Structures are given as C-alpha cells and as structure tokens.
Amino acid sequence: MLNVVAIMGRLARDPELRQTTTGKSVASFTIACDRGRRDANGQNVADWIPVTAWDRTAEFVCKYFQKGSLIAVDGRLQSRSYQDKNGNNRTAIEIVANNVNFAGPKSANAAPMGDAGYGAPMAEPAARPAMQQPSAASYSAGSNDDFALIEDEGDLPF
Image 1 (tube, rainbow, N blue to C red):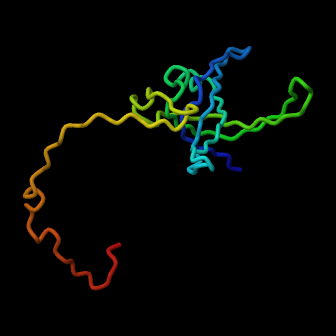
Image 2 (cartoon, rainbow, N blue to C red; image 1 turned 90 degrees about the horizontal axis):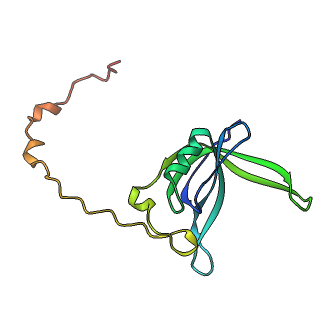
Image 3 (tube, rainbow, N blue to C red; image 1 turned 180 degrees about the horizontal axis):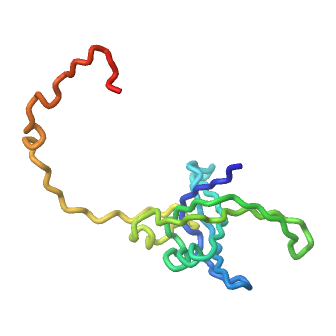
C-alpha cells in the first residue's frame, strides 16, 4: 500500500506544541494551500489542511515557523473517528508529517499576511550585484578536432 502526501503552503496560524503523558512532543498546525483557481468573487480558493508533527519534527516546526511562513511537508494521510461533545460521530483527516522543510527565503517567511492570512504577495528579493560573465573566447579556445566524427561501422561500443 502507498500513502504519501506532499504539500506546500503558508501556515494559517502559529504552530501549537504540546507534550503527551509519556513526554513526546506533538505539534499541530494548519497549512493554507492554494487550489490554483479563483471563486466567483475573484478571490483565491484555498484548502486548509491540518497537519500533526511528532518529536523532533514538532520541535523544529515550533522553533522556526510562525503564521505566514511558507512550508513544505511530506508525510502520510491519516483519518480518525471520535465523538464530539454532543455525542455525534465525527471523522478528522490530517497529514502526519515525516519531513518539514523551509519553502521560501527568510524574508518571505516574515512577510506580513494579506486578506484572510493567505495569498499575500511575497517580498521582492534584494537585487544581486551583477556577476562578471566569462569572455566568449574562453569557450571557443579548443580546436575543432575535439568533436571529430568517430568511425564505428555501425557497431555498438559496448
């Protein structure tokens, strides 16, 4: 069986770090992931995906990510059933993170969030100084014999 999920988006809120009764760290957070289309009002449509991370991954997320950070997560999809306060049966679906990575530069992670906390324009990267291009002569310094046709009489060399 195969259960692999990869998702990239922005954190909808700051991650929450908790400890289990056995002392394991667990973090919960939600990723806003763009669907790539707009609704009838012209607003971007996004899915709000709950994610759970355990142990060192949970601590990493809580230490380095905050609301609005661009994040990439791979893991597995998990569903669980429970009863709410009113006794109704509910099903929760979430991603259990295996790996979490930065998906943007530091300046983009600190960018203020726009409408509804999603889809804010990213900060423009700082201009880089122009690099000196190597002279064209350095590429044509070799002789034409470097690429001479090899006679093979149709035989394969292996």
